[in-house]
Length: 348
Image (cartoon, rainbow, N blue to C red):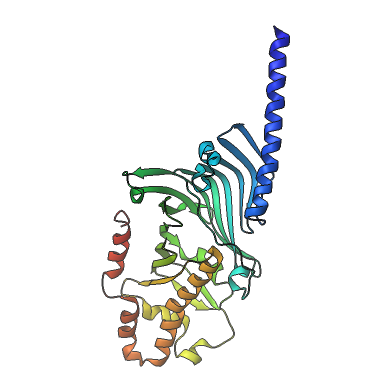
């Protein structure tokens, strides 16, 4: 009896080992065809419809310590690759956006990113990092965790996955960043992502301006950053409210001699009586790669904050400055609050 049990266990071990060896070979060969810049160390599967990958690399800027995929074996057999995935569990995801990529003028083109079909998503202990190696600085949201729920009203257009999670800004557990991800799996790349936070320390954003000549001192920021991708078009909405923020020069160049006002005076002009000013803008662009989109965002942010405001102040008589700023930012009305509540009523 013992020999039979031991024989069965040995047979199961051989089958398990052989199956996983073959699985690793086939998946790695498939990845070489799909995307040569992605890969993983090894994968393990105990049951055919669940595969766990370790040390996953996705192109040049993302890694996952452990990725578990639930697959639809029937769809794979039918060669319905678009619906081969049921869901994913990401543990230890790290996404890095490098300033070198953002400032780089030319970059090798890669295959367009296509979001695969899935109807559930779970994320644990993950982080998003903005890294500037030239100035030895980084901005990150860490400890990101959350899970999704699936809404199905019957029709394909009524099927939607909603992921809600949160993380910590710069490792500070008192500064929460909330993330919401809406995905329509039956449509190619139809999705929206919203990131929002309240009472975030403005000084923590200083690394983002490391290559400029501006220094942020004190103050808080409330913000919602939202983008939607649909029909190969991206629409973006940026709503930021700065409270009691000071911006000063970090340069030998005399900004005041050029524009007539310093950065510090500029922000004083922007503020209302409560020490608050807003930076709100929207833009639309054709569907782009994530790194290209980040470059566009930085450009639009600079245009909204520095370009239009600084140039406007430089050419306008002092007596017209407050009217000019009101026309640019909407300060003096409650438009900014309505914009925020219009996106998420729960954000007050």
